[in-house]
Image 1 (cartoon, one colour):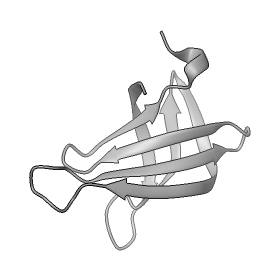
Image 2 (spheres, rainbow, N blue to C red; image 1 turned 135 degrees about the vertical axis):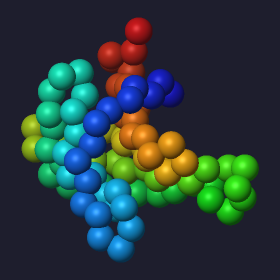
Image 3 (cartoon, helix red, strand yellow; image 1 turned 45 degrees about the horizontal axis):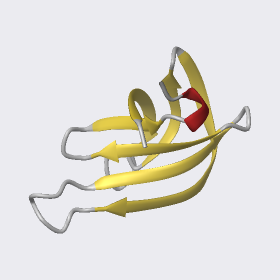
Image 4 (cartoon, rainbow, N blue to C red; image 1 turned 90 degrees about the vertical axis):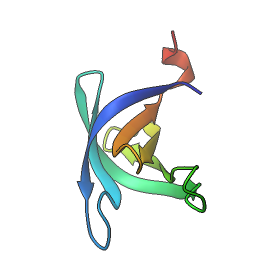
Length: 85
């Protein structure tokens, strides 16, 4: 998988960056219509940062997987295979 850094607008409730509301990738803002799935990995050891994943559907019907790295406070999107370099 190839990841690309993105800017994300989030809902912050009981924790910061709890879930994505919209994101900008390749100069286009995409609003999240629905979160289809979410999961996380890491976090049990200080050596492994917590990574939170969200499979989302946009208002345009596009599906993306977004990843939040809590250690670096950074978001990324999995680049779709048809757009990989």
